[in-house]
Image 1: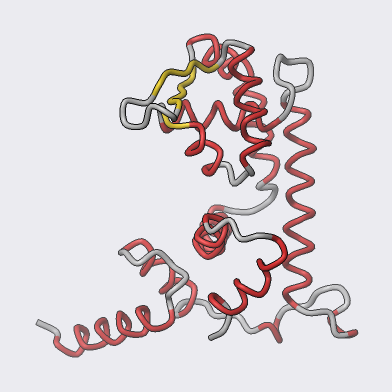
Image 2 (image 1 turned 120 degrees about the vertical axis):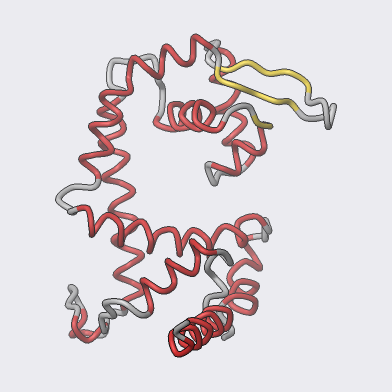
Length: 218
């Protein structure tokens, strides 16, 4: 056995436990952390962006680009449902989740889509009214409703899926497979950081302070 290699791996695992607290604590999380921290490191000094010479921060650029990409994606999504029975992109996103992950409670579906309860309930009620989703009492919690996609909902989704797939391909633009893999890893890392914060349901008046203290203090 190569004990030197084994010691190196153990050292990397110790560093992962120490510095990878915002990554999933499993093999896939370790792999993502390893790819981002050991392989192909790039310094911010090597990257250029608009306004950098005037002091614009990397965080500002990242936030702006994420907002821009969200708006681009929304534009393509609107085109994908043009002249269809879908009212909004959230309608088909909710159906896609139900089709992919099966029956779940209303709140589980709302949280999976990172939305507040009032907005999520409006979307679900709209899907129920269209007959695309059915609901029944939960066997575990009678106060909760379990919902699932109906055959009519699957037909509506299938009728639009070709255009939806085209829209998703356009959003990823000119990235090659390696770049897509890197982007998935980075976005997953951010998602794993933000999800537990979102689940806390902090009030807006305390959100920034709480997150700074609990998650950014290090």
